[in-house]
Length: 414
Image (cartoon, helix red, strand yellow):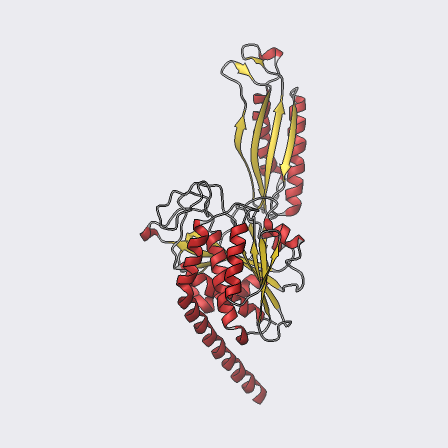
C-alpha cells in the first residue's frame, strides 16, 4: 500500500512538472512568434525550386548558428542539426521540415509576396521551415529540462520525384544516431487555425506518373479502313484500365487512377499517327501498387496490339504510401491534447495526395500530422498548390511550441 502511495505521489509530481513545462514552452513560443513570422516572410519572398535551395539553406544555417546550434549540410541543399539535452544518448527523436517551393505565379497582394516571378511557396514549406526554426529555438533554450537528443532535418525537394527525403536517407539522415521516431508537420488549409489533426496507420497515397504513347497509322479521316486509329485505341485503353481498379484491387484498399492529359494531334478529318496520354496512379499498399502497375502495362500493350497498333507504357515512380505508426501517433495525439486541449485535436481522414515524408515512414516509426491554417473570416481559404494560398499566421505561434512539446513528450516515452 505504501509503495502504491509513493508511486501515485511521484506520478502526480511528474504531471505537475510536465504541466509547468508546457506553460513555459507556450510562453517562449509566444515571445518568439514575431521572429518566426519574420523568418516565414523572408522565405516566402525568396522561394527556390526543388534541388536549388541554395539561398534557403544558407539562411536556415545562419538562423541555427545564431541560436548556438551547429548544422551540417546533407543531400546537397539540406541541413541536419542536433539539440542535446541531458543524457543525450538516452533517446533520439527527429523533426523534419521541407524547404522547396513550386513553379507557380503568386496572385496574393501581400507585403511578403514572392520576389521571384513564377516561383511561390504555395504548399507551406516556408511555414514548415520557419516553424521548425521556432521549435529549435525553444528546445535550445530549455535543453537542460529534457533528456535525450532532438535531430533536426531541413530537407530539400519534397515536390519533385524521387523526393529529397529519399536523398536525405541515402546520405545518412536516419543514422548516427538512429532516431526512435520522426515527426513531420504540414499546413492544412481545410482545418481552422488553432486545430491539429492526426491519423493512425495509412494516411497518404503513393503516387506514380504514367506516360503512354499509343502508336497507329495516320491518314484521312474519311478512310479509317486503311489507317490504324490511335485515338480509338487510346479510348479503349483508358476505359479498360479503370476496370483494373474496380475489378482487380482489394475493395478495402483505397486507390485512384486518373488520366489528366490526352494529346492526339489530328483534326476533324485527320487520324494522327500517335496519341500521348498522361496520368497518375495512387495506392495505399505497396504490393497492390506493383501489381496494379504490372496489370496496366500488360493491358495497355496487349489491347494496342490486338487493335493493330502499339503502346509504350512508361512509369515515373514516385513516393511510397505514407503510414503513421499507430502507437507513436496515438502518443502524439495524447500529447497534443495536453498542449492544445481536447477540442482542438481532430481525427483526419485518408488523403490520396502524396508526400515524400512517406520515405521516412518506411524506415522508422513516424507521425505526420496537420497544422490548421484556415481562417474563413479573413478570407484565408485557398488550398495548397494554388496562386492564392496563404495562412493565418496565428499558426506560427502554435506550430513551433506544439512540435517542441511533442518531441519532449516522445523523448520521455519508455
